[in-house]
Image: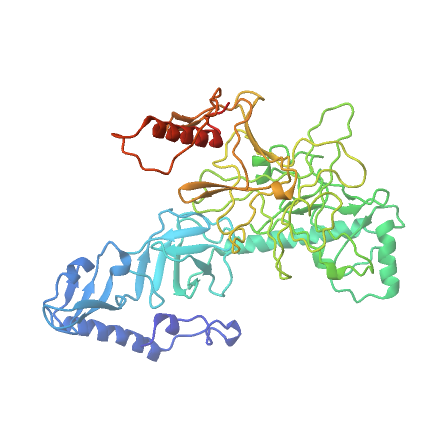
Length: 575
């Protein structure tokens, strides 16, 4: 049977605008409505069975096989539809076979979603076979805009011509009429033309103003597109202009007539080779921060929009990537190994007058109170992908200063010193601190992050004379520490926590100075050696089974001698 999505599609060839607009044929419309009539007639031939819920339908099995019934009004929208009886009267079940034959479905947007992610509700399921009518609760502020019906998949709203709606194209109180088409909601009505026209006029005026400003200040600048087809003389002139133009102005970069800077003249200072900006208080401005107005970044990092504060300012205008630094080794044509670095941050503490606080790199991650609970936030992530040989396990010996880096694939390395000149000891490699908030945990190693197929792998590895220490929460006093001071490989051992036991391999457990005794459930079991015992003489006997009623004194003395010898051997008593 024909569907509404087919009969009322936008183009002659679905999805192909060049095929021309589709004009519905009366024969196709008759076929579509005829199909609806056949379903309705078949329904009425059964006496018109209508149930208010699927639960009441499932409880009514006293109907013959192939009986048709409707569910209309179920609180679960997906349960509403046309059902067929499977099995004879009194047995079997009901199977949903089709949507209700509504060619027109009314939806309601009461503001449950957002301006750019609309949520609308209907009383029957929405499908591609019916036209959907919905109101708009609030004006959209961005593009694209999505709509979901009854909590279902978000559908991208497309205009009648297949484009995303413009910001301001959906205004509060307007009515949309469209069809569900795959992952989109295709409009039969259209967006507010005033928003589209206004956007076009603003873009045209900005482009004309930018072109006029650029052409008025640029002297002897060679304009070139991303793919150059310029002569050698023109390229030489471009390089000359980068150094300085003959009029005395700073050199300017222009990339094609459609790529002029808007309202800001971006220049290169020939004396310092730094990007300079003659209009904005920010230099090298990219994206949404073109002028010195306040931005959303300033809301969570106050002061960053101040004049002369930020040198390079890049704010994404599409909610995707703010900036990308990329480099690949194959582009380096040097014949000797080089250091290839995608991004470098350099800072220096060198002010002898003012005690500035200096960061080489700072990331600022912020979760708004009203953000979706299933969102994901990381202050920083470093991902490492290795298609070379599987890495071998490295030891602290392999990573000591001056060691070769060949073959290593470390995700993050924290080095003390720059390697250029000698450096004094630094405070620590990693700090975890509270800044008006606390962490739920300190360091977590995921259960599948480290390869343990051999039975064991180091989650944390350190050299001898290193350890872990616990300090008082209110002072700098060290309370406990665990460390290793083994001097040779043969003297090493293992402490293993197994299933219900603790195993100590190749080592003694020694209570040193200050140690006292072992306890079991708070009761002393073994303490310091009891001394003053003199060894007995005579014959020891621990193997003979004696009857306590008839044992002789010499036999008992031999058994006591055996016990004293055993306790002395174990170190519990001694001379």
